[in-house]
Image 1: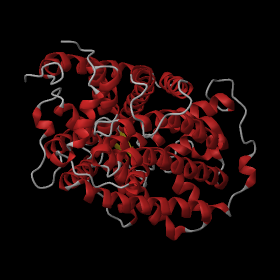
Image 2: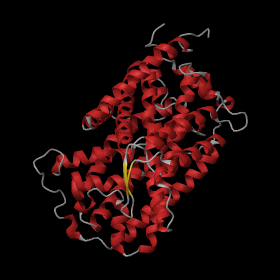
Image 3: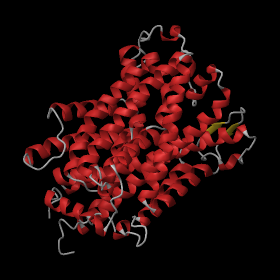
Image 4: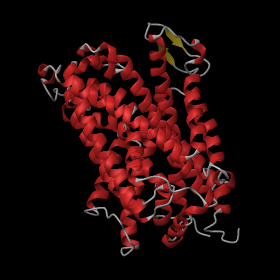
Length: 483
């Protein structure tokens, strides 16, 4: 019984062919692109752009977005090859199982909880903040104890400061609602996601088009502010630090790969969904940040949690301010929908392999969805969204995602060596340059994160290793075929 035993590619492809017994194939290439865009455009664009500009890059935050996108593109090319070869739910977990063995597959599957589950919790907290802004416009105010966690301080738009509440009830509400929707079906969830994507992309384009004519060119001078003498504070090091900050804005494109077993034509749809969504979002990000820093001097975004609204205010289109908040809420909603879907599919696959209890892979008789897993994460994610400060959640999401990207890049090189002749509908170009570049950039971004993030990652992984040896190793179907 070896913890390094790999799952044969033939077995994985056989599982993909059995989709009529499990998950339903309903997603087209267009839906997969929308799934990716839905996961990407959200908290990062609408809140982190201003922070990256004010603290690190200035107007050159546009270059930070391009740098972060390049790192994601290298990882995305590797994801696309795996997704076209192994069209099975599970994302990086499944790819690692085929290349680096069961133990590394468990490590990455456990790590993905940081990206998907805690990512959904993070966005849920941000969603609740914008909901409060929207309700305040109509003079509706929720009880202070029910709008933030016990360990954070919240300043409302009217200046009221809340030093810790009981629970963030709006965040729990939206997580619960979307989890229940996912139980009803992937097709229904994808239809809602497609609508939400159209809404938020339309508002991003409106922001760019209407804001463009109000740009003040003097706000771009200097385009790359001189470094203050501290690494990461402007200059080229500031652009790099800005890339680390806005990296969160790209988290989610890999969630497309978790839906491989529900794609109508995964060999074609996976690469289109992953790379197509990344290209579309990068273009929108660069144009959006260019307009935003052209409307308002970059230093005025310091400490501003709503930079998009601040910038748009100078256009005079006050009647669109409410629409902007509604679009941001729509954006956050679609991000959470994709994150929750991705998480449930990863645990579904791990359960099918015996590494988690059968509870997680039970399919609803009518809806054909892993409904018990959805219920489990409804509770798990709600607890984090309702009780943990958003700043602590965000860094855990980033470091977990970057680790997943690193392992996928390594996996492509391993697979090229072990199975050079295996059919690949999409081949990552320029191997080993692309995966090595992806590894280097992702490790550099991990290095830029606070020490606390590394400590939490180590603790989380230690817990995962303990669970693997206590349950997963003993119940693994690959290592225990008679079970």
